[in-house]
Image (cartoon, rainbow, N blue to C red; front, side, top):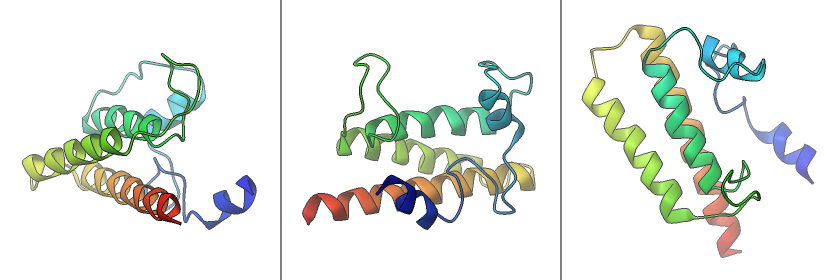
Length: 119
């Protein structure tokens, strides 16, 4: 049941722990594709969106339908991990928190999808 699954998720993928979406996510929700603020959060959203496409959470714009690609999802999670590693101690606290939250949520979704695939 899609509604029940959405309720189990602690917060939407691209929000901060205090349940406030960052300005980039809010802009995307309003149809603004290129937000005025260009910071590390924009890169995190870009990579996470690709991960979500590979996890089948967002339809692939090239295929026009959702499809799962675990190896592709793992690739984008790994890129986010590398971004986190390379930027450690160089981000503003809210940027580091956002990147960590996005990564944590994407990893949890990946684990749930992998578990469901083995059932």
